[in-house]
Image 1 (cartoon, one colour):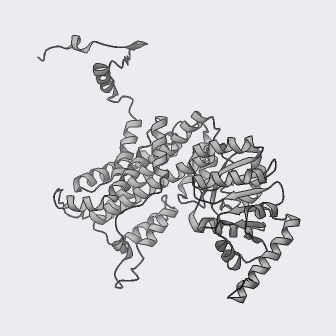
Image 2 (cartoon, helix red, strand yellow; image 1 turned 90 degrees about the horizontal axis):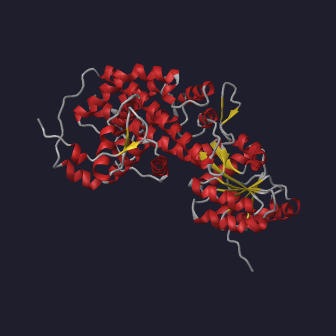
Image 3 (cartoon, rainbow, N blue to C red; image 1 turned 90 degrees about the vertical axis):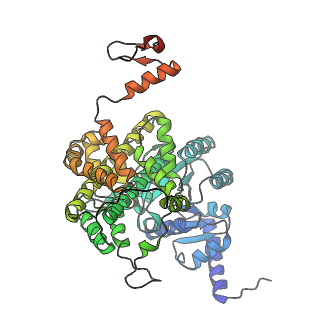
Length: 505
């Protein structure tokens, strides 16, 4: 005999069971969701709030029961104690979304689902998955007669609940089946808030690739903001209150974005465990974490041979931050310049703003260039205007700036590089003097700004019709007979450099 120690739990469990039993024969639920961690739980609530009926399941039964007894205790949601019950509760064609940890867990659930589903049913992976895994799984699931979606989901806990950015790719036949749900639950932008931040991206792993690039750009944005903060704090001497006002002002102009907004808020937050004048940010250890998507983008950029230098520097900056103990030891040995605080803080703050905006343009130019290279490599027909609008709301990098990017690709869908769009060309020209001043000032003061510096180096490299790679290729041919091409004739050439040497005059 089962003993329930809390009558309320008994009642709720019984009600949930009766509800489930009734639904089994009706199969009335619009979608199923597996995985009730923070993102899964909030996404389920979002789906229900838009009028869709959702069946949920978690491997740990108590998690399911706790959810349906609390936040999920509503008519639109039912908790299931097995994957088989979940499948039975969903009306065909079934749509089942996985919100579980990327990797083997996804493969295991797919293997469990395949024999339970019918032709035309859809499996959806909403995790932070490697695009190559999605490529493989799409083929596997389609060969089983089913449909597969790999979708990026961005916006964190709040976005999942109130409206995320969704980037679906995979089986094109599945898109009409999930489109009403996905576009209803996504963030909406536009004058009338009628443009969903969700649109079909492309086949196989395209959706997860776009999400990866989003995360890589996020790495770059965050690093650039941190460098701006460090410059204003240590070169201009601004305190947290002043920094909050600076970021508040920046958020009213062309830098208007979620990340600028939350940075402003961070500088106003006092330490709940400290004195009234103690700010929380000053007590946070300077060791940054990472979950790997920035590294993925950097690695894949190298595979494609495209210079996504800013995200790479952002990844390296996090790696260097992790060497906290070594840095503390080095700080007592290695020396740097000792320059006075900049007196004209207002002028310097404006220069940093311009440098931040210019660097941001270079960063997004790299991101979209990598998307274009990946699209060519994998035969994806990506719509870059649409992708910019996917990121306009709901996600971490949402910013007014993305309207400009969407407009640029709307005017020229085959734009070779974002920096060549007239608006951005002009913006870079106007910011160039300030940009160079800030980078030089950082170097003079010994303040590390790898993202600012690499952004400027990328701009200068991209605008140069000649680079010193001629010497590099000569070196390669000298020691390895790698050959070179000439500017004055066609073909590949090799020289016997030892024979061509001449005595120094």
